[in-house]
Amino acid sequence: MKKYIVIGNPIEHSLSPLIHNHWIKKYKLKDSIYEKKQVEKKDLKNIIDQIKNDEIRGANITVPFKQEIIPLLDKIDRVAKVTYSVNTLYKVGKEVWGYNTDSKGFNESLIDINYKNKNIFILGAGGVTASVIYNFINTTNKIYVSNRTKKKAENLKKLYSFNDTQIEVLEWGEKPKVCDIVINTTSVGLRKDENFNFDFDEYKKNNNALFYDVIYNPKETNFLKNAKLRGNKTINGKMMFLSQAQTSFQIWTGITAEIDDEVIKLLD
Ligand code: ATR
Image (cartoon, rainbow, N blue to C red; front, side):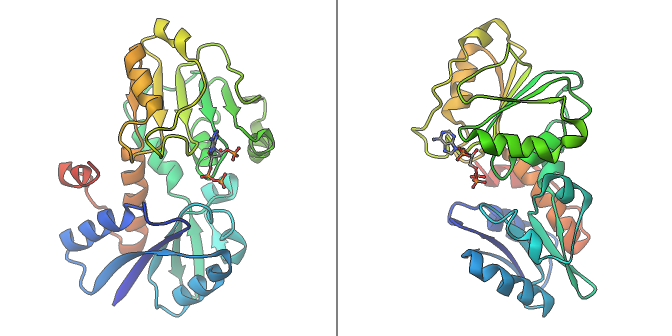
């Protein structure tokens, strides 16, 4: 049996098994299965050992272990090095390697968006934020980052010290002048009743402003609902999620799985 796994804590909400098992069936990968497993930090070493001895063939890592897994790995890819975030594991030779496919996933979700030389406002400094910022370094104008815990935003900025004039850390609640793209990378909105205290009223004047929420479940957070009401454009995290899954699947199987209507509908 070829076993794939997503580990995190909590993990119940993860829709990765739904997507990967769909592709496993579609591409007729015999004796393969993708499961989710809630683990504690102390279990991470055991997961790596299971990959080393071929009990697990590939793994996804989600919150809160995307950083904590790194010291246990033999090698990490270039994006994982910059973002200090790993979401995919695979055995290469006798080693376990870590990859960051979140960043590429985010990039592919922006395919129809012109973000060159634009101003970006990012809310949050959690597990996925560095992967989002990666795509904007050297391409956009200013990147404003604001997080409830300011220190974490400052640490994020340090990851990009090779270009630290582009990133400006703001106090939580402080807003830059109207930006072209506003991105929620916090977990606020995962529960349907949650919302920010931010007043984005001035964005009414800018119908071209895009509000992007990396959350895909629920489909429309209050952050996006309010943006729509103001007349702004919106995107949720669905395509980012599917694209990161596609790259993980590719690393493990060599197959470029199709992101078609059928798989998109699985998330509805
Ligand atoms: P982690 O921070 O452990 O990596 P995460 O789920 O990847 O976990 O990130 C959660 C993000 O949502 C963080 O930016 C967090 O802000 P803090 O760093 O201050 O904790 C943010 N977040 C969670 N709940 C929030 C709330 N009620 N208001 C504002 N930001 C919140």
